[in-house]
View (cartoon, rainbow, N blue to C red):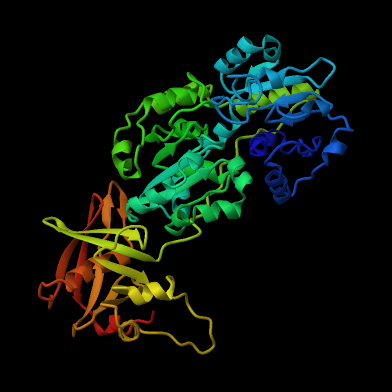
Length: 537
C-alpha cells in the first residue's frame, strides 16, 4: 500500500512547525477502505478528495503515479511504491512497462501539476526511466530508499524482535506474498498450512507477510479464516505497516514469490531464500527480483523445504539488493535537501535519523496440544512435536490443561499443567503438584501420565500404575556464549515415553538424552521429594 511508503518518507519533516501534513485518498483504488482506516488509526487529518482538488498546496507527496493526481495543485514529489520496479501489471498502462515507471502515468502536460521530483533508489532506475520517457526523467534523482534505511537502522534489534516473537533458538521461516493472481497466497494458498504441519514445532517458527493490497482486498477476517490451520499451529501474521520489516530482520530463511519484500530481507543480511514463483506475465526479466529468482533454489513441495534451503548458496541475495538499492546511508539527507529546496525553506537545524522499527507482536494463537513422535536412537530419545491434528498421530498426545480444549484433554496420553499467576483473592485456593496430578489421573481415565510444571522449572510427573512420583529436570545447553533452554513440556514427553515403555521403571536417579533437531539436552529423572510434591502450582 502506497500509504505505508509515505509514512516512511514523511518523517523528513519531523519537528518542523512550519509544515502541516494532510492526507487524501485518490479515488479509484480497490484498496482505499484499509488506507482510510490506517490513517484514522494514526490520528492524522484527512481531506475529502473533492475538497482536496479545490485547494493549492506547497507540495503534494505521492507513492504512486496512478489515478487523477494531476488534479491536486502544487509541485508533486513521487517516491517509490516498492523496491526494484520488478513487475508489469498486464492490462494496465503501457505493455511491458514497470509499474511505477510507466510513461502512461508519468507523462503530464505542462499546464497540469508536474512532477517536480521523482525520487528513485538506484541509478539504473533513472536510466530505465530515461529510456522510456526522457522528458519524465528530467526530474528524476537518485535519493535512496527510506524504508531500507529504517530496516538497516534496526538490524541491531534482531535479538529483541526474536524475543518479542517468542522465536528462541528456533529457525524463523518467513513466507512473503505480493498481491495479484501470481502471488504466493493466490498460487499456493495451502502452502502455509502444509509447512505448519511439516516443520517440527520446537525447531521452526513460521510467519507469513502478506502485501497490504491483498489484505485490503480480502479483509482481515476473511484472510485469517483462510489461514486458520496455519495460524492455529502458531504461524505469525505481522501487521502490514512496520511489523513485516521487523519480522524480516528476525528471519533465518525466506520463501518468496516475485514481490519486492524479499529485497529488503536480502539487503539486511545474506541468508537463505528460496522461490515459489512459477513464471507468468508480471515479472520483468533482468529486474532485481528477476536476477534473484533466476539464481536461487525453487521449492517444489512443502516436504522439501529443508533441502531447498540447504541448496541456497550465498551471493544472489546480495547481488539482487545491490541492483535495487544505491549504497545506503544518506537517503534521508538527500530527500530532505531536495524537498526543502522545492519548498523554498531552509531545512531545520536539528538532524533526523531513521526511526528503528517497533518490535513485532507474537503469534495470536499458540498451540497447546501436540502429537509427539518419539524415536529411540543410540544417541538418545528423539522428540519431535507437531501441533495436534496437523499430521499423523505420534507416540502420544501431549496436552496443556487449561489452554487446550476439553476434547483434547480427554484424549491426552500426557496431560500437564503450568503454574497459574499469583492470586489476588482474599482467601486463596490452589493445587499442590501432587494433588493436581492425582486429580488429573482420576478425572481423565484415558490419560497415562499427568504432570505439573513447577515455578522452579522442574516438573512433577505421575504415571498411572506407578507407585513412584518422579521429578523431571532438563539442563540448559551452552552454545558460543548463549544458553539454550527447551520447554519443560518437551522433557516431560521424553520422560513419559521412557516410563510407559516396556523397560523396567527406574528406581533411582536416571539420565536421559533428549534430541531436539541437532541439539541434545540432558534430562534427569528421579524420585520426587516431599517439598516438590507439595509445591503450589
